[in-house]
Length: 155
Image (cartoon, rainbow, N blue to C red; front, side, top):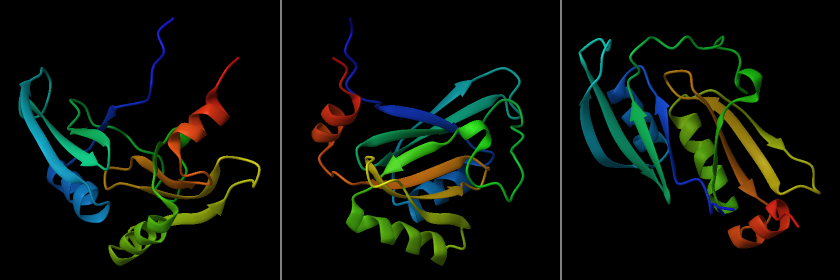
């Protein structure tokens, strides 16, 4: 059996690449990485652009979808059917994320306290400018190896 170590990267569709880059870099603290152009059928311009953003040790690829993505109502902050992208930060940086969201007038819900017996401390929930649901949380146990062994190990 293959033993996967962790999730390395993901792609998030955005309506506007410039707006998406501003949000993920200037508000959430990411760093621009690689940019690629690919010809894809049915996009508005005939070219889909993928812009990578590095968030700590995670690669996030922003892409403009070929079709418009309808999003849930503006007042819904936790994600349709529980679907959202979750990012973990050290506890000491959690308040800085909230401060950046507040300063940039990004509406969020939280912090929401998780049960004390579980691995998560608190979460905040919000949307990016395209309406993607996001969660930022901190872990009670900062050591990722301990977290993996304790909460994901199957005997």
